[in-house]
Image (tube, rainbow, N blue to C red; front, side):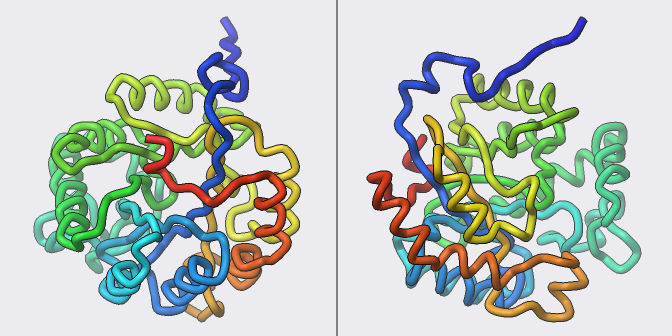
Length: 284
């Protein structure tokens, strides 16, 4: 049996929802170059939200900047691969490489989380620790997502839902961009789980098929007909690309993404549409 699932037209309620456009920067806290881009994108452009990596090297600087920008909606960017944990590496041997960092092999990490009770216990502890670290910032929690969209993993999503009430989680990114291909059934399951938990989510994203290359041209093209409900454009901007950033994500046009966020043409198009940049709390 072949299951046909539509996300753009699957429920009448979506057509009744107002059009909202969210502009989010991921990896807030990764380094000073990213943090500066987030501030410029928000103060001088359309950036309305940022996803904070609480255990990243420049997290302290990001938090200080966020407190100076009260209109910037900040969420938690759970980091469970390709980064350092919040907890001591000694507490997370099933999740880490020998150098104390998370595994870079996303598939292998997912298999361990699913089949190993030890890995799941340590994963639960680290996820809770990252939520607690975010709460300690004193910033309102606008949304939750995960580095490399690892909240698509059923174990990670389940743990987010498990702590949602305690940490005032109200919205989670749905990383859906058509065509979703093999991810379509996972998206359907994710929508059901979030809805049953009473959590809000966007209707679609822009950025999965052009990660690191969400430039002005692409943004304007996708704003020609944004559609009903909430569309999240997510970016990975930086004021300049360092060797460390290039090693972490080769080929990302980070300056081009910042240029899109500060583009007068993008701002003018939003005005034409009668829209102001939104955030997840607007859809929750």
